[in-house]
Every structure is written in C-alpha cells, then in structure tokens.
Image (cartoon, rainbow, N blue to C red):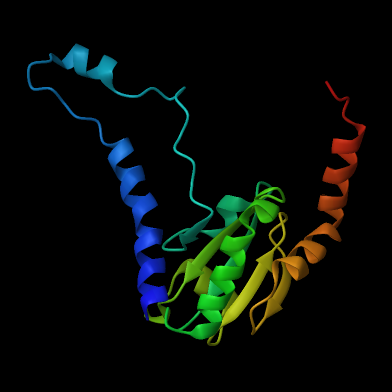
Length: 171
C-alpha cells in the first residue's frame, strides 16, 4: 500500500510543478500592455511532459507519428501487476525514451477515458501502440523492458530510424 501511495504522490508532483510553471503572476501595478509583454511567448519551450502520466482525456491520436504510447490499464492502482509494471518501466525509463515511448496509465474504469473506449481492456492490460497508431502488442500481464524494446526494435519504422541514425554523418 505504501508503494502505491508513493507512486501516486510521485506522479502528482510533476503535474503540480508543471501547473506552477505555467501560471503567470500578474502584477496589479502593470498596465495591460506591460502585462502582455510579460506573458510567455509561443517561441518559449513548452514544459517537458513526464515519462509516465495519467491518460485522462488524452486522445491517442495526439501521439500519432511522434511517439509509441504504452497504455497500462488496471481496475485499481492497488493491483500488484500494475505496481510491478510501473516499477519495471521506471527502472529503465531511458531505454524506452530513446525509442520515443510515453507511458499512459488508466486505473479508473468508471472514468471511461478515450483510450479505454478505444482499446476495451479487461482488468490489467498492457498495450503498446506503434507510431502509426496500430496496436503492436497487447498482454494481460506485465512485460519486462527487454521484451518491450525487442518488440519495438522489430517494427519497420524503428528499423528505419536506426538506419537513418547510422547513415547520418557524425560530428
């Protein structure tokens, strides 16, 4: 139970930090023109999204051609399979981030998230989605990062990415 509470708290910290960064304090002594100048511009870098994040109302199509989402479904965050899967992913996050992986978690079946509506999971479910939006792997049990990376590295788009990196001139 302590592990789950620690996970929930650690998952919420980046979200509160991102919200605090996006908030722009308005000095009441500034005029409207000065306030507009103080606001962040579109050229500024957006805050980087956390590697593991709640799916919420996120549409899977937002990751199309950019990322390989892994969606972890569970009926409750107390599910030991869910905790094991998250621990494995966190332990080797760098290996997955190199492969453009983002992890979305959904532990509330009652919320009926867009991902849950599209993928129709039952209980614990691991779903790997390719960059083209197709379901590449679906399992009712946790997978090791080794199994995940081997599956990704066999995908045609990943093979192309590796070839392009090899062909690129080194500096």
